[in-house]
Amino acid sequence: MNSCRVCGANCGAPVFQKSAPSLTSVQTVLKCETACYFCSKCGHIQSPDIPELRKFYNTDYKISLASDEFDQLYEFRQNRPIFRTEKQAELVLEHASPTLSAKVLDYGAAKATTLRAVCSKRKDILPHAMDVSDDYRSHWMSWIPDDAQATYVAPLSWNNRFDLITAHFVLEHVVDPIYTCRDMTRLLAPDGKIFITVPDFENNVGDILVVDHINHFSEASINFVLALSGLRASFVSREIFRGAFVIVAHKANKSAHEDSVLNFEKAAVRKSIQRISDYWQRAQELLAASVETNGKLSAVIYGAGFYGKFIASELYGRQKILGFLDKNPHLRCTNHKLPVFDPMDAPASVEVVYAGLNPSIARTVIANWQEQSNRRNVKIVFLG
Image (cartoon, rainbow, N blue to C red; front, side):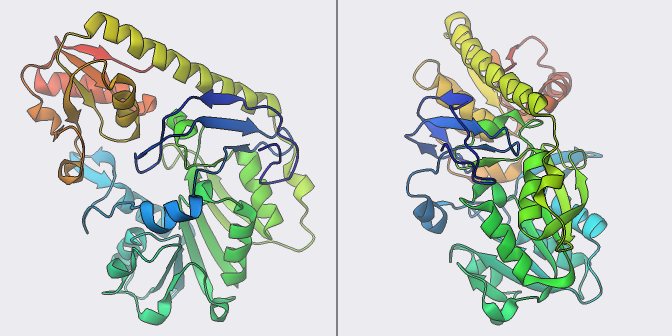
């Protein structure tokens, strides 16, 4: 891992390490450590490839395959759940503005649920999907023509074809992000756009622990990848999608040079990495201390996503956990070792609640739950 995946510079020693086991983005447990390396030339943070990476994505990475309807909860808006697919579709329509009868490719599509949501609002769009697994074809067959589907490699006949390409949380997983972006560039029409989302590790501290997220982009490193791929960002935001960068890019002038994006605050990125490393060190210490104090009390974990699973992995065998609390109804139908309750149906015997949520929203969510459920007397344990 001494060589940066983005610019090739030497990364030196790891700036973050956590011993095995590790959690993936689909919350499976791998028997490997988590480590991150920082490139001071381009601002990229990277982790080692996970074991048998190609097999993992081809056969083991079953994202949202629990049911046709499965989706990740993003927020509540006027008491209505907004799922990640709906939020992403809103952003695509607002910021990428597909042209009339646009040919749109969902690159790394999985079930292509975001593209389907976009097409439900724009019937004129011509949908295409590509992924590195055949697992999702059954989800495409009813609404994407056979000749608009591809697995493993997009055909040469698709070169310069697409008015819009979307890549929703793809680049953090790939061994060679520049190759992937160049592949999208070859598929893009001369005046087309690419819509990209990637995790923002500085605003989503859990991203550092996701072992199959082998790339953790700073704004500098994502711009460097675009420059080396013949692309240039026309829009970059880290505010409109919580914990993520949203980028709209287009083909760049050939005279554009990567040196133009290398001027960034290296000390600021290093400081963020140290802050996040300290956060997780404190979180582990806090959980250990909580077991000493509250180990005989009945407990639940609020949040059945990544943060909640991290807490469960730390408490396994050390404290009895009754289950998870989560507002996402889809999670109550999935295969968890512990039951998933609606927060308003939390077991009456609960005495301790571990907040397994992104720290940017954890205190607000827990305070609202305590107020609505009249559980003000339970102990709350936050990760930080």
